[in-house]
Image (cartoon, rainbow, N blue to C red; front, top):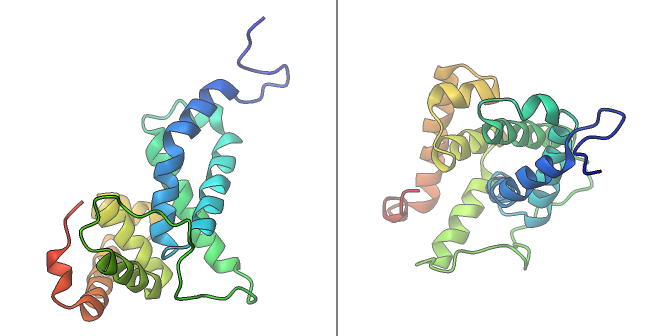
Amino acid sequence: MDRTTTGSGSPEPLEFRAFAAAMGRRLVRTAYLLTGGDAHLAEDLAQEALGRIYGKWRRISRLENPAGYAQTVLFHTFLSHRRRRASTEHVTDRFAETAETAVSDPDPALRLTMLRALGELPVQDRAVLVLRFWEDRSVEETAAVLRLSASGVRSRSSRALERLRAVLGDQLDELPHP
């Protein structure tokens, strides 16, 4: 007998597995940007977000946009992690050897500089930039995910872009747009 639910009413594992397989790499890539290039933490955050989703999969699977919900859970997981981070963790200027880089990356040095600059931004400023420009979300969507006002998103975005411009200078205009 092929069942997708257990007698205890747990989520449908096969359907969730397909969702997790489809969303996993995207969540890790987004988390990689949020963490400023920490590949291991990015994987941990993506896994934690998927774990949170699994517990509510029956309800989430019926949503209009479960992938958007997964991204929102990832951002909340990231912000929560930043608040509870232990003081024993050490931020470094070196990237993990397993960090992904694009095969067609025209300027790896610029990419590393951009990741370093993103990593130096305050957590919420970084989250605003990733949501607005990497995830291509509107100001209103970004505000809803981060629980900020629309004007707060615009001011954080403006301030964060200014900081990036200060670090990158003219190189920022040369970056390809996603």
